[in-house]
Length: 192
Ligand code: PRP
Image 1 (cartoon, rainbow, N blue to C red):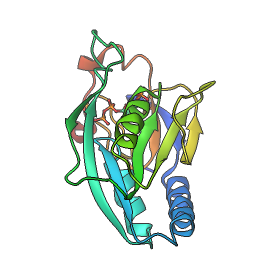
Image 2: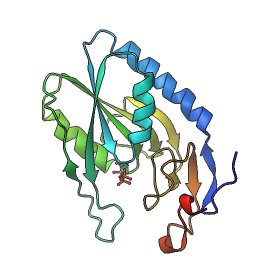
Image 3: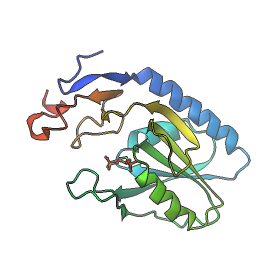
């Protein structure tokens, strides 16, 4: 493996382990939705785009891909826990079998909000598929398909970012704690 970027402490989940798990989830989805006439996958931008791209190419049941973008103000000083829709779906989901695809659940605010909103649109079924979930005592939203449970660390790679960098790393890595306290002092991976 290439040398780690100096902003990264270590690799948490190697690329081959992600690949194995994504394939397992795709197999599970194929079994669970074998009787349905189609699945409506909703990728949550930006973080889920790589997970969704790999998952959808392994999925053997008929499916449609759509996207939503949400903003949580999580990275701002005025963070209030509020979530809002920045970009909505192209089509109605009433009567459809819907699967939300997320890269990470941290506090659960984003997924919980989205689950409530989409449930209100009366899909035939609504489930969630999450690559990473931080260890928490409880969440008020169900996670039906989970890639990995991880410790409470800032992780990047495979779609996840720090200041929009590191999304294209093939593995999940831990960002050094001192880096997210001083964002202006790091270079992006492309600068290396
Ligand atoms: C991340 C992630 C989830 C959300 C999870 O998005 O993709 O949508 O945070 O956090 P929560 O469980 O505490 O609500 P982020 O705001 O980093 O945006 P991005 O996906 O565009 O990078």
